[in-house]
Length: 322
Image 1 (cartoon, one colour):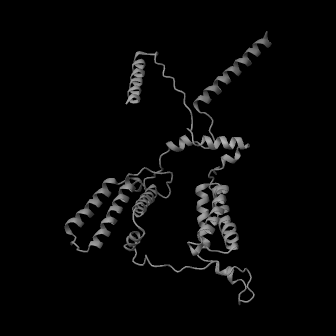
Image 2 (tube, helix red, strand yellow; image 1 turned 135 degrees about the vertical axis):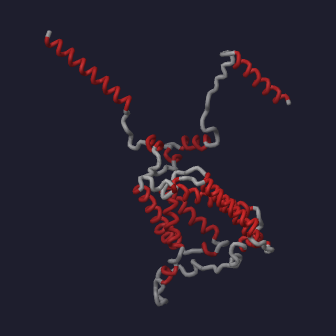
Image 3 (cartoon, one colour; image 1 turned 180 degrees about the horizontal axis):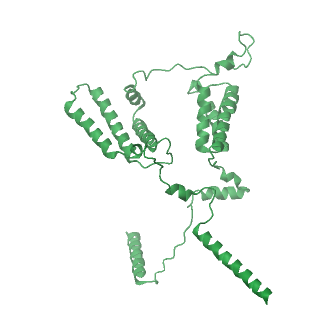
């Protein structure tokens, strides 16, 4: 009897412990690798010294902008130079849009050093995009004339450099046998490297970046008859550019993703399908809907739904007859 009572007490303790664990589970569920909900709900830390810099200051910006416009309209002397007035008007419109964007555009994913900086970058990029759209609707000559208003030195022919004239890796007849290699080291070397570094951080897939790098070199082959700068030696294309500069930039970009704990992307999902039949079905499905949703109208479920279905059928019938 004593043994049975001890067993009952043990089971009661286990049951009570299970209830307490279930209660604790409901009150505080286990944390995942990163608590995104708490991160989204967390406010920006402010110790009292940064309060001024974390406010929008919309009214202040509006007041200062209004004062500047009033000064230009009333107190500034009028100029009869049409080009000067057009330039100032375009600059004023762009600055106004940027100021409104800095104060009104929602914050993006970047918050350091300050969200206003990234709102400024986004506003400037929109102004730049609008300028490109405007140039798109102009003739090449008019576009060149438009750009000469920004810099009078534009519109002049550039000196074309010959990269594919002498492709010898070792030239024994020259004072420096490797002068052809050193001659290819110009500003485009760091441009290739840092460009593909940043592209890899954006694309986050070494496979896609490598394919784009190789395809760009093939594109240079096809356009070298139009752009002499694209005429390069074979080792300049594939060793110096594709393998060393682009490849090293892609490698550093992937290492940067690992260092910053950024998730890499997989853009080659089609190649993960094992069979050619599956690949073909996936290509055909790309031109169809993303998903199929089954609708059940249930016209007899209620009087309102019955009337609604009749109205829809009536409208469809009328439109078909018309």
